[in-house]
Length: 495
Image (cartoon, rainbow, N blue to C red; front, side):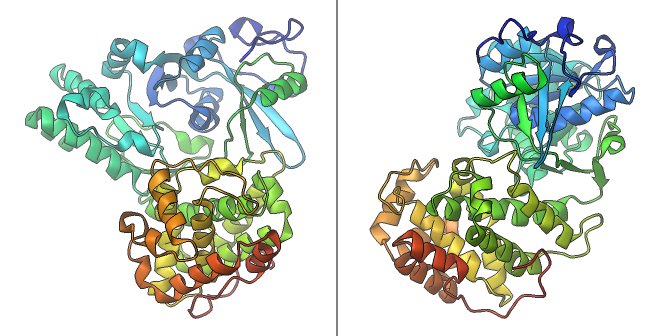
């Protein structure tokens, strides 16, 4: 990221009041009075657009005791930028008609784990730290096979901190995962407890008895910031931020009310504390993340490259709308407090159509071997189990299988970004119009091969739907049918 031009002040504590833009909000609190209480592991665009904004809003309400120490995993560029900007950064919310910008001041320190491990360990042992939050991506929850390498993992870092606190007779901190996993709380607890048991049984018992691992559901679309984004932010808001964050107006944070140390009053700034976060995660993962999967592969093969372009195509948008309305929604619980499925469905469609975001379809298509089993395939399995309609769910799977061949409908290469890309592509090419080689990979597809009706629909789609853009558009409008009773009445938008 290059420096801003000389006529626009570079962002720092000293230049907070120097911007000439009346559209740029700045911290209305004294940053010097912020006290660190939270350590966040895995600072990236999403954390800065989501959790950091909530803590900034707390500071605006006068809760100065909830400052955040950010810890990056491996990106020295982020440290260079934030060091130069006194840990300030700009969050730009782009809506369909307007954009707003706020400089976020809640981060009191930024550390890079690979260079500052001892300092990070000291911060985690500090009794002022009452909460540790994580966005380390799904890969971060895989422990090394060799116990000797445990210390190099995030969970080894956390266990080290608990060991120091136990020996000093200090209270533990709450560990709150904000990663988009089916059960992030269980994954976090298991990672920590596995490392602790390998190291010291007494320590493991102390953690098991004293530490809380609440679940959470987080939601905010945050595309990767580009140099063009930075230039636009500089021009529109007259702020020299070398790494701003672009996001949407929508934000959601649902947290299980289970803390072993002080609980931040995040409900004062829009977060929702609940007894059980599971149904909220289920709705979000099936509707938003499942729609992301379907939109990514069908939209890409239809020739689009952003969510906005794809949703501006009435055939693609109609496919996604009916998929959500007729095939996914009937399988979800309808009595979750604070969640209206019809309204939520409409909101998701509106968000996907936001021209101010235009998320890259390539990003949605990444890591399909992880995302599809978590977000879309469960709906297909559930529809089969309950005898529900699933033609569009089956077609979305077929689109993924076609995408995995690594070439689009005109023979141009597709960069399939997946940890299992080679294995999946070889199976996709070997099968051609027959999905059997891919469906035999049961740790991805489960028992889908036993669902004869869905397999037949997938096979017909692979054979007939992807020969040309015309055949694809025809299939999107009327996918090959998988058997099942019609779902309940539509719940979001018109067809």
